[in-house]
Image 1: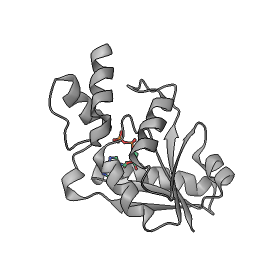
Image 2: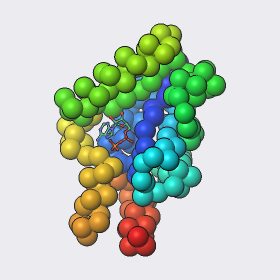
Image 3: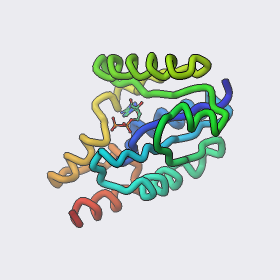
Length: 160
Ligand code: ADP
């Protein structure tokens, strides 16, 4: 299992996501960050904006690629030849949801495995939605997201 996919919304990417990406890029030969196109979810950034942000943030990690996808994750995995779904875990509530997703994906394709990486304690409270909430209320998001995307977030929130 040399190629893994880290799927998510990444709206926007946080330091919690980035920490998982950095740590797992050392474990797998190749890591694909899969940015989900979900028309049912209202997002702050378009999927293309999110892809560009992540590409910029991971540009120094040579074995990390970023791809947008819609539909079944398993289909993207087959297209990319990836055998592992990578997930980050923050809490018991993450566990319940992720256990369900891992079981479902295993049912859809038993050849795929889901691998979990625990968050660092300092990121266990961090989510994309909490970052958006803090930014919308005018709070400081330094240290929560990669430095270079802070102006994008502030600009986008001010334009809404
Ligand atoms: P969010 O929950 O922040 O909206 P996503 O839906 O984009 O994030 O999540 C993509 C993946 O990243 C999921 O596996 C999720 O558990 C993981 N993840 C999100 N935030 C963190 C964090 N702070 N630490 C570790 N993993 C995280």
